[in-house]
Amino acid sequence: MQNEIITFTSPKASVSEIFRTLRTNVQFMTANSEHNSILFTSTQAGDGKSWIAANLAITFAQAGKKVILVDTDMRRGRQHNVFELPNNKGLSNYLILSVKDSQEALAEYIQPTLIDNLYVITAGVVPPNPSELLTSTKMVNLIKTLEQMADIVIFDSTPSTMVTDALAISRYVGSTLIVASHKKTKMEVLKQIKKNIENVGGRVSGVILNRVPLSKKEYGRSYYYESSIVTSTVKPKKL
Image 1 (cartoon, one colour):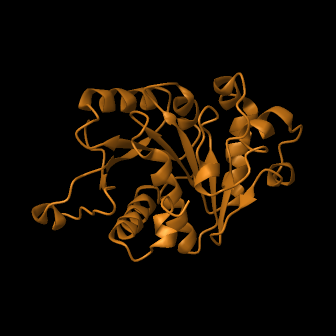
Image 2 (cartoon, rainbow, N blue to C red):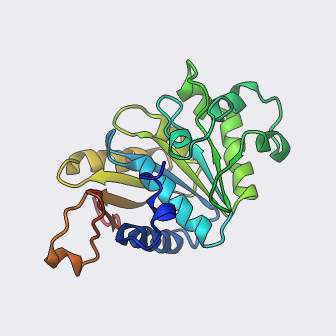
């Protein structure tokens, strides 16, 4: 946990500053949206999507916003490990077992964290039909309910080249951010993911380029380095 949530354990680190910059960018990109929810997907496993989603959630919470982070990767969810939370009563459990769509029913599945203002819904037990659960009316209602309960809701979803889970959710949230890896993600793959999201009615607000190497020249262009993990925000012009 300590190495994952660097914005909490090392708020003065350079990488924590880039997360605060990302927070500002997200606020500007979503200022005119009727939704207060953001979905994270990636081009492939290992891009750092869950790490970025967790640390962005922390920076919003540190700014005084009530944040609910939802792990929608019911196949290989990680947020319960990141925040050291039990995972026996998470999103899948709610979608399968809960008979009511209400704030009171949902509150039983929302767990507090060590960070003030930050709450997490873990992925829950692995179900046999995650895609079907994410396209259900119950999931759509859950998104609407969470938007009423928090200042910002962050959904950590699956990589979009592996399964269609992220696509299923993207049309119901305010915007989607795609995480890509420097010199590993192919542009044609990124273009296809963006197209797929837009084809189902989703909105891509930005691309986060992860693992960008630092040089003195690049430092002036706001690249940051910390423990071999690098992030840079990139606005999605015309992919």
